[in-house]
Image 1 (spheres, rainbow, N blue to C red):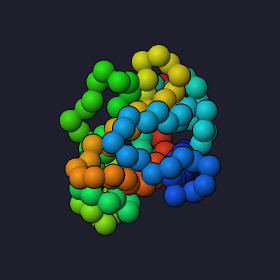
Image 2: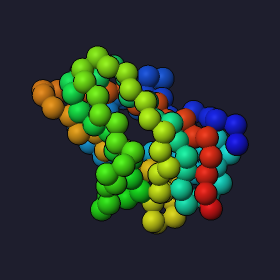
Image 3: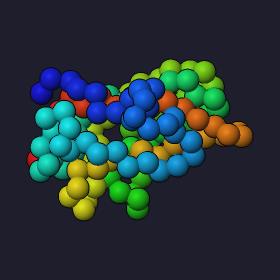
Image 4: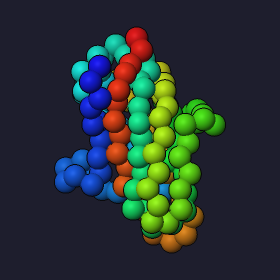
Length: 118
């Protein structure tokens, strides 16, 4: 598939920057990823973090993989490719968990989809 931007928190209307949270991102149904997709190939970028931390993609709130994490420092832009399992509920969502150090942290997140698995 042609790579497609599924999320960019720098763009108005796509949500605020991430803080210390789990955020659900709809991937299936966007970017020509079918609703039947069970996993997606992604390029995930973090930019403009106010503190050090990590961003972890995972399919549901109970499982967090050890691979696919992006570790970053304040004011650092980092990117990584990963294959992420979508929600077991079949709703085509991906959870992104931001864990950061310090007070009032935030980081912008960009998610580009470039493939999927059914």
